[in-house]
Image (tube, rainbow, N blue to C red; front, side, top):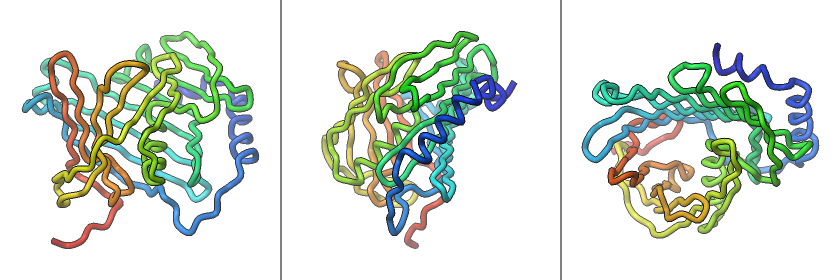
Length: 251
């Protein structure tokens, strides 16, 4: 069963109410040019010097502000000898120049129904409904609560407005967790498309020490071009390999 088939298990009436709430209760912001633009980005993933696979991000946006953000992690041949974790994530929702409003988040591991997770944001009732392994439970949410993918969009938006200390509530793993992002420095990062001046940002979860370092490039609408994580004594890196949707000066 596909992700979209599983998503249809959610109550259609609640889903419609969410859309009506978003469309009619949040005023549109008139701007000359939208900040968010469709793109496709591919990253190479490494553990120390060992290539593990690839991450592909795809972002699509309709003219009325409905978005689809898709992440596909694909293990490489060598990594597949140790782990076959192919992961697909999707976030669907609505956005404008001031707000990112997730409506549905989907997670799929290895094409197995038992590992699927779906999260539905019920904004009229201020609840989030999570379904995992056939079990559904609900939790109260506050305004601006995000899912694991939509918070990436919101970080980019707020960095573009000059914010340097960000905090969000994120529906993650069946719980509502606090994510914090702190700009710590400005550095130049080499990419296949040249060198970019970047904001170096540290991410932490709850009250824990920072676990991710992310380099956001303002010239690329604050897209990340490099991501690092320290975990269990290993360093993991994701580096930009290919990017579509942006124009680059000829070199």
